[in-house]
Amino acid sequence: MDNKILRDVKVVDMTEGVAGPYAATLLGDMGAQVIKIERQDGDWQRNAGKGEPGRFGNPQFIALNRNKRDIGIDLGTAGGRAIVERLISKADVVVSNYRAGVMAKLGFDYARCNVLNPDIIYCTISGFGQDGAYAQLPASDTILQAISGVMSVVGEPDGEPLRVGFPLIDMTAANSAVQSVLLALYGRLTGQGGANIDISLMAAAASLMCGGFTEYLASGRLPPRQGNQNSLLAPAGAFKVAGGRYITVAVLRDSHWQKFCAALGLEQLANDARFATNAARVAHRAELHTIITPLFETKPAGYWLEKLRAADILCGPINTVADVLSDPALKACLPLIDIGLPNAAQALGTPIRFNGAFFSAERAAPAKGQHTREVLAGIDYTEEEIESLLRDGSAFIESGSA
Image 1 (spheres, rainbow, N blue to C red):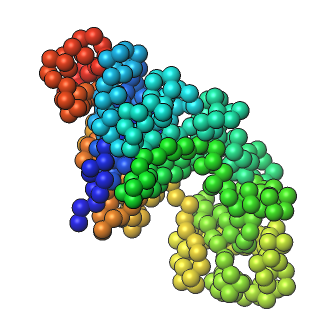
Image 2: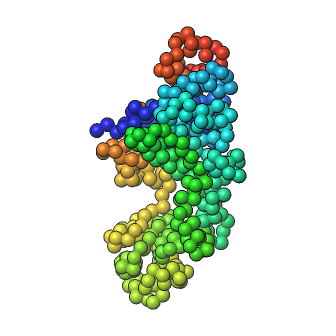
Image 3: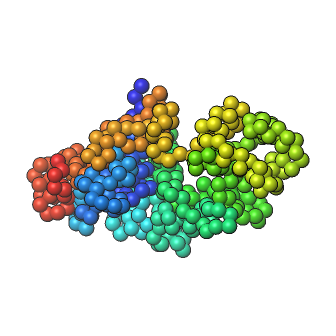
């Protein structure tokens, strides 16, 4: 069955970086017709990182921008703004991720877009929302990991706060944006018209820590940095095994504790008062670790994983990306898609299996301005008008693009 359910939905993508581009790509994966508006300098993500990315961008850009057409527009020109006005008038959704006020300066805040298209679904993603004392501050995933409290709970208990090594908050905000757009599309079907959606990285980050925020509001206790151990369970965390690798183990219930002890040959601990309940094990975590940590180091990962899985104990190896891709069973869980670009033959797609299939990439990430002519023709510019827009710089096509 076809999983491109949003094939009739038109999205104007006025985004750069991570959160906004990924939100638009997710909608594109679901079938939406996404048009990415790109300035002459280009989306900064194209050139982030090391080395020359080539005209289709670096692997990060490629991962975040499939299933889109790209039009090059100079929004500083009257002709360029007129193109965007026409695009919005024919669209269903506008997605942007600039700080508050930028879209208004460009001439495309919600009020203006609502005039152009009363049924428009307008979704902005910003650091701190569209109003308030912090609305004008620049923001990024790294900055929000710090400000939101995420970094305060990442790291060793007595160590320094650490950053999560991928754009966790950007990706969470993107998913929230997609959920809200889908909600608004459904609302439009029920006669509610368009919508004005405001997604902040701050709220997205806090939502990931809803348990910690609720705990503090209820008790005044701050969530601690836990290192590789789960503060609510014991044993639950990472343990070094023979050969220098690590595995992770989680004992959820006291009945699992009995099985854990049997699997490790530690039957004498099963009814030890210090460890008989989870609360007791958490309280005596250090004593427990002095017993099980040296034991884990005597055998390799495969040995312990086999023992623990046979006892129905939650466990797994701590993998690298390379480890994941070299494991056929894990690789089979992933939505790997072929995109055929010179510097990225494959990419990881949307993690949704819909009617038995993952979403595909009908289009790889575009070059800057790759589809300028095609998009302009699609919104009823004549060939002569297109050539005029290209001559005066209102629109552009990067060298080598169609």
